[in-house]
Image (cartoon, rainbow, N blue to C red; front, side, top):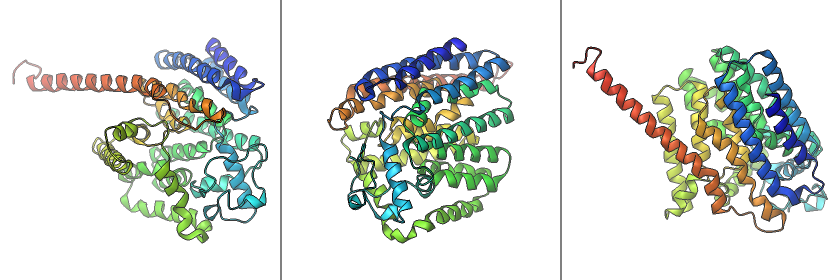
Length: 424
């Protein structure tokens, strides 16, 4: 474990020490894939072997070291944190971020002069209220990174609690704590998704502890941080009472009340994003290539996603398994699957390890490839070859696993019909 940790730490040290980081994006992506290989070996070790307290200390110490190594490095793979900074300044200026956009407030000089916003200049905020509030909690880029890394570390603590409750080896927390995509998303890039992930894990913790009210409240907080958690509401309500939907609805309404002055503009940013953006997608892109319009592909994706929710309800999946199943489905069907979106599924691999999904958590860093051309002033466009390298192995493995599961199911059904005595 020390050797593997040293290898991953060396890679993050190199990434953090580049004097011209935008010129080394291809090397960074290649090294993140190498870190992913070391990570997969480490995940295999904690999955297959009984490890003691020293290994757990190495895992937790290395996880903190990885994050600290890149915390002060510039966010070269994503510029979203500069938008967070702008929206925080907008709120401190007393302006409703749902009713304004960068071009409209250019005269106030709220942008970072060294990193002016070049995307979404006419788009109001698309982030839910809790995330929007969190943008006002910090002022500097390093401050945002510290905030969201702190929430990321808190998720590691909640994962340890969940593993304890489920009587699973604590060392399996490595599957989240060492994942390169997680370290890059929060410590290098400062993405806010760690807030939503922490709230979702807390919701899972409370539903397992049979505290339904708290569970639904934290699920609502996750939804108010990023809308992904909404797909899990039926699963949680089925394990509690459907009347708890009022708790969820009340929390969501309360979250939006401080921004209600925007009126119908509350959803303008989200609608613009949904109508125009498509990046690093897989099944959605295939549906478009099959001849469907964007609206038709969106409808098909919605139908498939609803079918997945019904399947999870029919199979009575426990919350952690349902969280993994539905979030993976959401990511594969979404028109936007940025690499940091994949951090949502990684915590649940600690409890239900699926090799194909683990592979996707490693190859997702290929989704940063458009940054290479973008840093050189070219449009942010996905490469079909890179998308194939990212997703083809994952779908091949998923297909093989599904066929294997079907063969096993047929054998078990046949054996059940024959009976122990070999007769009908």
